[in-house]
Amino acid sequence: MRYLVGPLLGLMLFLAACGSGSGDVEEKIETNMDKDVGAFEFTTQDNEKFGLEDLKGSYWIADFIFTNCTTVCLPMTTNMSALQDRINEEGMDIQLVSFSVDPDYDSPEVLTEYAAEYNADLSNWTFLTGYDFQTIKELSVKSFMSLLEAPPEDSDQVTHVTSFFLVNPEGKIIKKYGGTTASDMDIIMEDLKQLDLN
Image (tube, rainbow, N blue to C red; front, side, top):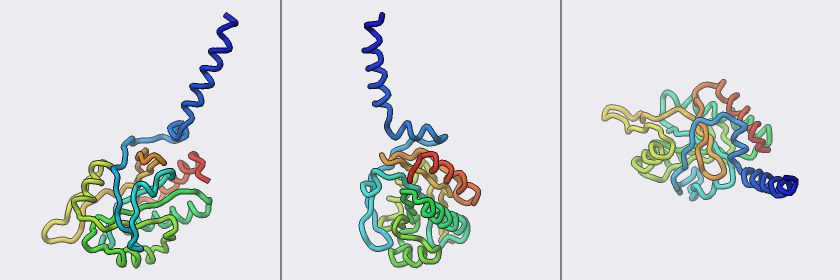
């Protein structure tokens, strides 16, 4: 029996090493999603190309907003701005990405003005446009499992989700949070601290 101890110990150490990926890190938080983000490459507020490949290797938080929104986007973007301040204060390495759901109106210039209104630090918060509505609808529905509907004929208000989504370095959405309630930012910060993103 003692001759089996060495090989068994070696096998256990090997298996432990194999299991030391980001999945183990994510066991530190309670996840509620497990969905790969589909490949994309869109246009930033600075009129530059930016896509999923630029985010690989980093945790990031995404939301869906539009600048003409008269309801939920106001608290969402206010909360994202406050979240960014807290992330930067903690020195965390995390990106924020806001997808416009009104790309026809939200040009890079419009998004730049919108970002300034919320004191966005564009070094780690990117606003995206440069696609048609069907493209962003497919990304929202297929990757983020989130409803997105064009405005009715008598309105310019898009129907979209109010969640914030945490995406891991491999491009997998692992958790969604409420985006309109300030207290949810506390939950996000606790999770980010558990993931040790400094």
